Image 1 (cartoon, rainbow, N blue to C red):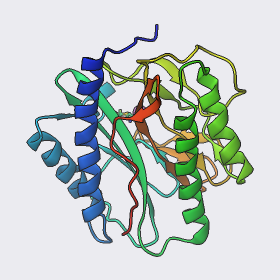
Image 2 (image 1 turned 30 degrees about the vertical axis):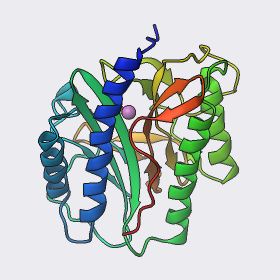
Image 3 (image 1 turned 135 degrees about the vertical axis):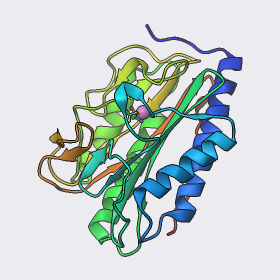
Length: 254
Ligand code: MF3
Ligand code: CO
């Protein structure tokens, strides 16, 4: 069952989402070669708590950190620790916040100075794919219109979309119905309706779409160890079109 959120609920999700967006500003300011991913995790958590929120991933199915940081061939769910950020890395950060009973969830892939042109293109195409998906999240459309918008953009640029992980509805729970695959033919699945709140999150691999999980039981990597990028926004479907609840698009210059 896909719940339709009231105006008041949407504002609560937006309030959580604005804390997520603020945490990304903190990440952007501090993501430099030499910093450890554990320090980034701490900075995000301090920011979130100062704003009255709770880092949503901590303890989720036993997840041990506050945010996810996934570097280069890591796709998602990388666990922050003593690893240091290096020049040339592709750093995907995923942040979820719980505030006043509602969740916001977003991800962004940062380019640390000196990334290859191919890595830059991968991140650009993944971000464009997210916005292509958001653009078709409108009343009267079907769920898989989002999937197709993402897949077609990614594949026409020579990359692949991860198939085993999906976007999701979000609200009172971090993961609600529907599952939102990032691939599939358009015009199928549930009709999109005003008040649906969706976390749309393409994960885009440089080569094959296959993934595997490392021995830490969390870190998902590309099977062929090619690079991967991940972008996510929490979006509400309205009569006037999609509205992003986790802050606007921002340009990242590191
Ligand atoms: N942000 C992820 C998602 O969108 C959730 C992270 S899983 C966790 O589904 F276990 F790390 F919390
Ligand atoms: Co998500």
